[in-house]
Picture 1 (spheres, helix red, strand yellow):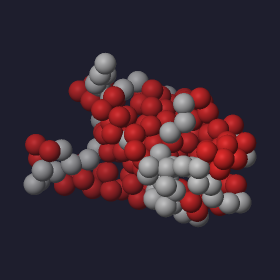
Picture 2: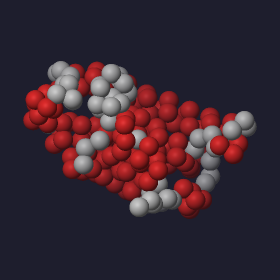
Picture 3: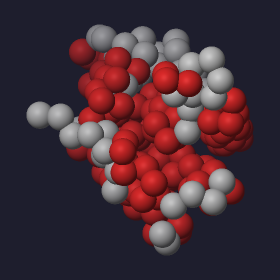
Picture 4: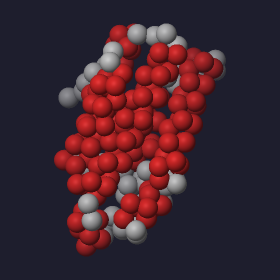
Amino acid sequence: MDKDAVIRSAYENGFNYEGRYHGCAQCTIAAVQDALGIRNDYIFKAAGGLAGGCGLLRDGPCGGYTGGIMVMSMFFARRRRLFDNDREDSKSSYRMAVEHHKRFIEEYGSIICMDIHKKLFGRSFDLWNPDEYKLFDEAGAHTDKCTSLVGKAASWAAEILIDEIEKRGIDLEEFEHLRFVCG
């Protein structure tokens, strides 16, 4: 696996998906999955309500942030069949989430959508108000602001995930069981 190429692909995918489709959490997940070549539609679908700080309300965590953690946890997190004793994968998912959080704080000063809006746009927008949403879009949400954020979130998640895979000495092929495309 060419780590730099995967990270670059994750960024480009994230930027382009957010620009075209919108929905920061799902775009982040799709970007990383596609960069790694392991698609799981259930993980993608599960992130549907996380856009815009959860439900477009902006007072929750950024969808790029939550989507990044979800896609990393798709690979390493506690498994249901080992609910009571899966410490290694639990610790991996925690470490990756902490690193993702650190990068968001360094770049944006927060993980909260509303705060990130203020940093990127100088204000927050009511995404449920059609006039406000239009202003949000006109301010560059889907041309350079949220698109860049999703690109960064996807590239960070891909890099953190690849680092964990390498640290654990695992080949990407060992994750083939995660592939699931639903109709």
